[in-house]
Length: 185
Image (cartoon, rainbow, N blue to C red; front, side, top):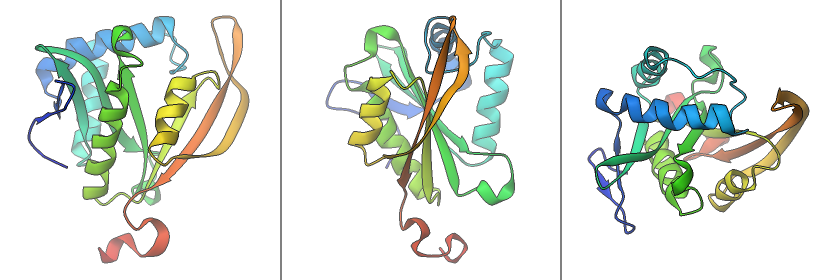
């Protein structure tokens, strides 16, 4: 884990996001909203909403990362509380989004690996993946390759693009997980 920019073997730079990245982040997410099933959001949020969401994540001491190639943001990842109630503060949900031309090239795996590391360093104990669409084999495979196991399936829980979509739930222990009190750490 690093708090600085990290150059990867693939020539990508992984770094904390900045306000200057918001337009690129919104463009990546807009593509996912309008053409993908990884998110069940159906309306593209305004850049002000993306900024509010990022501020919320950062205010909790959690990471919001970007992957940059040749000066362009090509993907991003963040973690936030799985649910807003305080008891969930050690259980995070990850989100990873990539430009379509970057999918299948290992960028998502690099982002998620760094996100896991930073979340462990922040004291999180569990990470959940709430994957839209059981046909989202790329996301399921990346999560599985990093130690996530499938813990559930919510059948036909979303309606998008004229069809029912499942949600795949996956989980990975972080650090010592449930083997000790996180408040004793």
